[in-house]
Image (cartoon, rainbow, N blue to C red):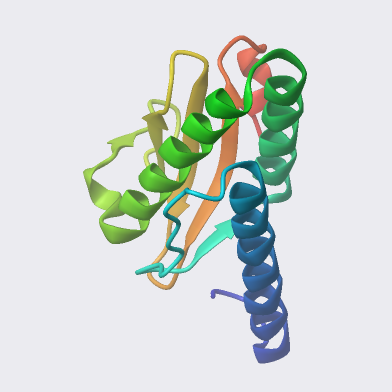
Length: 137
């Protein structure tokens, strides 16, 4: 990973593993029948914004929808993330920045990610009902 020391890279990998285990636990807690595989082809690193986005989405779904809706959302999300790690170049480039790619997960949520030689950064799980200015870095 560009510009990082070996110890920083190791810490990032450990943090990523912890996040993946936490997500897997959450998914299995919500629906034990979910088939879940985080054997990623290219490491996927969640930005703090993507984590915050997912937390907000899950909080909204828990308060307003059923566990089945939550399970369906998470199944679709992790299926697409798996596809992104398999072949990120097939996804559409963002109109604002060519190095950023996006995927419309639902009419309300768009994934934004950046592809590097060694990993993929999941930047946002953006709620399209928000002000698009929030996407700016």
